[in-house]
Length: 246
Image (tube, rainbow, N blue to C red; front, side, top):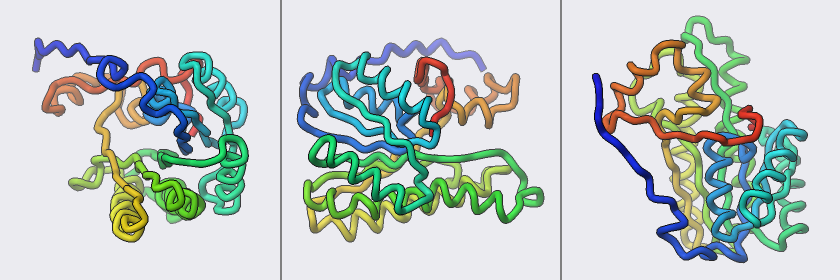
């Protein structure tokens, strides 16, 4: 199917007040690349300061330096594993020590690979759940007291995988469904403290690690034809090296 639809996105800087997030601080897991990198960059362009979390220290540091250069705001890199609760406690403490508070938390650390259920080992299934779902819980639990204090908000990066039965995505689908459910509980339990919790579920994002892993070579046009607007969103130039640092 050929589409002649042309989309010219309006830059966020043309819509919102330039310093709308000045004085705010965001903690982002998976912030070294992809979707979360671009979200962090946009927030920083509006004055927000950021602490980005990932497992690969050198790439994370490079991403933080690039974010700071490109936005004129400040980003720090805090290497750590979201699967380890103590590590997340330490990251939260370092963020508060550096910036004084945390206003927003973006839970975006994720893992994924393609496998049919019959070929999926118990260890592999657990690995994805630990990164996506347990990692989200650890991040929420470690930041909860601070976010209640600042009346802040959580944003969870979910997916559309579990909206229907998607072959070869049993582990990731299960993990993201759990993230959606956890976000709902956070919203209900912490709402009385002035805390918001929401999920966003991006579809296919061109130029990301997920797209490169999950789209078979040569299937780009087929994937495009299945998108109602006939255009995948783009996350180009997400890092200087184009690699994943989640």
